[in-house]
Image (cartoon, rainbow, N blue to C red; front, side, top):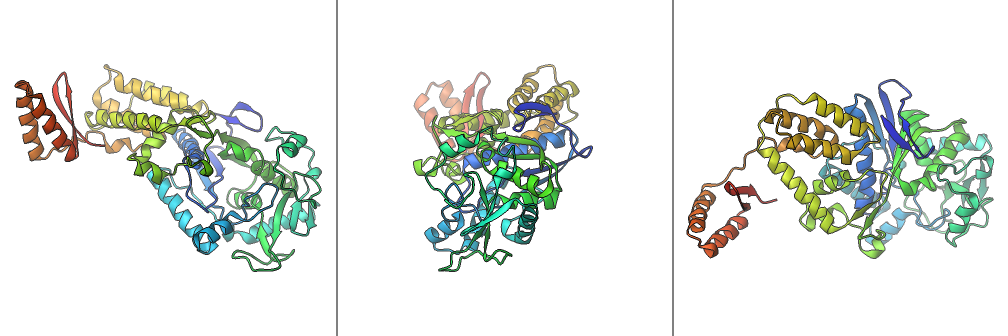
Length: 458
């Protein structure tokens, strides 16, 4: 199996540290607001990588963190914690905000049929581990104190930031005007932030350096090591994290442990909306709830994501999502006509495996599935068995539709008979009226070469 490794900037043959077993860590949500479809492309990418590994016989231990403290609004470790901003805006405690949006995230994962990671640790449940990690960095001479916290000294690492590919001066030139003048280097980042002296924070803890809270980056180093040891095999996340957060994770592990934390860094590209940037300020940061309210099945978004390689940008439009919904509905309808699965086709399965082994090539895997579906030489039961096997990777719940005939109520059957007579009499107006009445009852009538075809309304 091959994966594109951001660290080497090339596609590499995947070799696990322990034969047959994979340790994988994914950066999860900061739970201060609903996750967007952009956030969920990253989560779906991790899910597909995991499914591809399992399809190929690996045992995967997957860890995804929940950031419920320490993620600041501004660059350069300035500004407020995102949790506290949400707390003030919504009139809840930071703990209540975290619970609300964690539960929403888990609900949307279920809607998208994303397999629950083996461990989903929260930053606030691992303060002791983060403090210990900072102490190890301190012992090794990688920290210094300022008036607002304890910082990591990036000048102590000659190759800091190589994951992003940016030079130090490029990062400095591209940074916002917010500047902490006490930092020794522009790239230095907070490991522990002190609480304000004039008021008590909703989330704060005692530490050897004073009352405060952890920086955003330290949680991933501490929790990935706790649950996967270090180094581990694969770390996933959105491409934006390759610029700051993930280089800082690497720096922390190198500073505390003297080696790389991860062998394969895998990043997915952004989702654009209507050809432009997606952001809450532009009002186009769609959530899964938004899609449902517009009449879409959440799995239509999963199907949409499958149509591009994870490392390629995707342009999201409602028209594009409708096309994905239509394609998924048509696929389900075709599966309803197939019998119960018998045995899957070995040559097609080998071709499918080759697709997902090649950097989790989901679009090619979809093409193989439709080749099976359209193959007149395959027995129908073999087709259904093969497609159900493929769905172990796709995660579209296709086995729910195989051999599931549409149950048509008797009153609709009577309307269909009346409509057939109306069509034979060329009474098109009455025929259309009956079609519309049938649609109101949740069914769609299509006229084809074999006459009327009735389908459930999606």
